[in-house]
Each structure stands twice: as C-alpha cells, then as structure tokens.
Length: 208
Image (cartoon, rainbow, N blue to C red):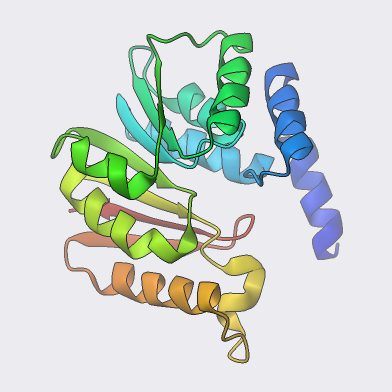
C-alpha cells in the first residue's frame, strides 16, 4: 500500500460528520488551510487524554480544528480561539453553532496572536494548539510555557512542513523556522516532546 492509498484508508477510518464536512467546505471556499481528519482525531485524543477544560487555539480558520478539540474536551470545557481574520471567525462561529457549541463553550477573539496572548492568564490552560503564522511559532512556544499548567500540552501543526524539514536543500524561511522550533522544543528542559508524521507534521510536548 503506497502513501496515497494509506492516506485514503485512514481518511475513511476517520469519517467526518456533517458539521465537520460543512466547516471544511467553508475553509475551502475562502482558501484557508485546515487540519486533515487524522490530525483532527489526534487533537481530539490529546484533549481527551488530558481531560482538557481550558484550551487555547491560535488560528481559528473556519472551525475544523476547533470542532475536533471541543469533541475531546470536558463537557464543561471552554475553547479560546484566536484569529486576525474576522471573516474566518464568522465562518467558524457558523460551524460551531451548527455543531451545537454556543458562546458558553467557545471564546472567539479577533486579533493577532502575539497581541492577544499577553492578556491570557498564567498557568490557566491545559492545551495550547498553534496553527497560525509559522514565523511566530517560537513566540507562541514562549507564551505557551507561561500559559500552561504543569502537565499541560503545547501542540504545533505543520511541524514537518510537508516533508521539507527533513530535506537539507530546503532553506526557505518557513522551513528554517520549523527546524529551529523543533530543536527548541526538543532541548527545552521543561518539556517532554514528540514529533509525529501526521498530516503536515505534529509537534507536541508536555510541560513537566
């Protein structure tokens, strides 16, 4: 079975319901990338494993990853999701409402991540999911170390750059930034990390 066949089989093993399909369609309409179903299911698993009650998402998009995270969080959990594009947040709100998640479960904040993060409380979060500007990932990591409680988790989407990170000839700025992030997370004494070849790559670490 080649990579394409395996990817197709995995997608069929994680079928998305009508709410996720609609959110993914909205993302495609405005050209905003979103996590695939396999990555989404892993986000749900991580949120569930940590019994996450307070989660921060950087990069709302049209709400695909938000839906996966909420499905793993505790029933009384609150997701704070940040995106500078008000149109993306409008689409995400529609996706979330259709899936049955009202304002009591989600805080939608329109703004740049680096402007919003300083306003969030220290040590108050169980999971921080970063799927925003790759060039700012190192700043997101620093913020996550402040925001997360002991045992909390930081997760970065697109960490392998669709394979470019492993290609020594790839020297574009985004790929270089992803390599530097992976090294920083690996070498940070306060973190227990893993790097997974899921989707475009998922870098996750637990605060010890």
